[in-house]
Image: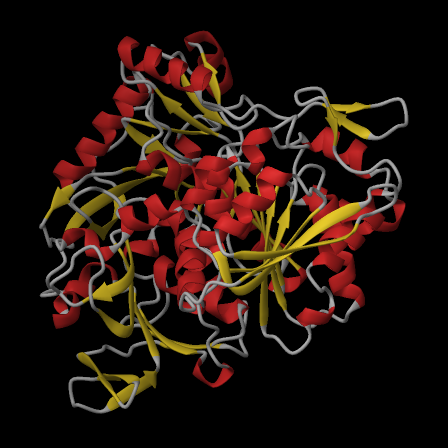
Length: 622
C-alpha cells in the first residue's frame, strides 16, 4: 500500500495538530525547549557525545522533525564532537510543502530546516538516507508502520527518543511489540527518554530490561521518563579503530569505485586495483545506461531494491555533480512502455495500489504517445526523475572525490589473495605483493569467481551488446524509453539501443545478429521506427559482460566459508567482502549497495531492512 502523508493542521493556539490522531505534535509552550529538556536532557546529551567516535540515536515518530533539528543544532553547538547517526521511523511523513509550513514556527532552527527540506525524500515506503555535514551526520528516515519497520532495522542505538502521539490516541506506538523492538535495537547501556509516564508503557519497558526513573517533566507536565538498558548482550556493531580503517578494493567498475567512495567518505584509506588501463573499462564502460526502478504488484525484493537504489543513485549523482566531479547523467524522465494490453493493466494497477504520482505516473497510450512524440500501441510508467547515466564517468568521479583517501592502481592484474597476520595480501602473477589491508572487497564483476574464495558462487557471465545510432539521423525523442529493449537520449552524438543477452558467451566481437536483434527490439518498442528511419545493420556498438546471479539479485556482504555447517549463520572469512551480481542494474544499485556494505563493515546503522539484507547475502546460495 502507498504511504498516506500526514496533513498539517493547527489548533486554536497555533500548535501543529494531527487530524488523524486528534493530538498535537509537540508541547504548546515552545517545541524546541521540550525537545532539549525531554529527549536530549533525558539521554544525557550533549555530554555523552564527547570522547566517542560514533553515536546512534533511534527515534519513534519523526513528525515535523523537531527532535532531529534540535539535536542537530545541539551537536553543532557542541563542536560536532562525533559522527552522529539519527534514525527515525514515521508512518505518515509530511509532504515537503507541509514540512516547510510546520517548521517555519522555529526561526532559531530555520537554516537547518531549510537544509532538511532541500534533501527531503520521495514519500515512498522504505529507508531513505540523507547525508549532511559532509557525511558527519547521517539522517536515516524509515517510512512505514513502526511495528513492521522496527522489526526490520539493523542497528545498535546508544540513545532512544520514544516519541509519538499520546498512548490513548495511538496505543500501537507504545505497545509491548514496540518495546520489544526497541530493546532489540538498543546497544548495551543505551538510554531512553520519553515525555510519557504511562503505567502500561513502564511495565512493558521494564519487562524488556530497561531500568526506569521518573524525572521532572517539561513546562506544565509534571513528570517524564528516562531509562537505561541493562541487558548484557554482546556488542553487535563494534566501532573499528582508526588504524584499521584501511581497505583494498579489487575492481574499478561501478561497484568497486562506489564502495571506494563510500569508505573514503567515512575517512578510510582505500586502494583500488584494476587490471585494465583505467576505471570503468569493463561492464561499466557503456556510453549510457538506463536509470529507473522496476515496480511489481507484490512489491518484491527486486522492486524494493531498485526503488531504493534509484533514489540513492539520483542523490549520489547530484552530489558528485555539485562537487564539480565529472559524472555525466541526464534526468530526462524514463518511459517504461507496456508489452501488451494485459501488461498495461498490470502497470496501471501497481501505480494505483502502491506508489504516489509524484514518483511514477501511469500514462495511457495517448498521453505516452504525446510525451514521447511517437505513436504507441500501449501506455506505460513514466518516472519523471528517471533518465540515463554514463557509468564510466561515474566511476572516475567516485575515485576523484577523495584524492587524499583513494589510490587507483590501474594496469595491475591480481593473480591471488590470501590472509596473513590479520591482513589481506594481494599478489600478481610473479608472487609480488601488490597491496595489503585488513579489509578486502571483491568487486571484479565476472572475473571475481575465478578466485578460490568466491569460486563456489553461482554467478554467471551475461554477454550484452549495445548498438550505437547516429543521433543526427533520428528524431529527437525524449524521454529515455524502455521496455522491450531501450533507447537513450543523445549522448555525444550517439543514441544507445540495446541490449542483447547471452549467458556464458565470451565472444568480445560485435556481431551482426545482435545488432539486428537490438534493432528488432527497437522496432517493437517504437512501431515502424525502422521503416521510417531505415538504419544500416553494419553499426558500431559495444560488448560487455555482466555478472548475473540466478535470482537476478545482487550478491553483497561478507564472504562465507563454503563448507560452513550453519547456512543461516555461516562462518565467514574475516575482513573479506564482495559486491557482485549487479547484472544490468549497476547504475541503479551501485550507490545504495556501496552505502550498505560500507555501513556493514563500519558497524553503522544499515540502509537496508533485514529481509533485504538476507535476500542479497552471499550466504543465500549455501
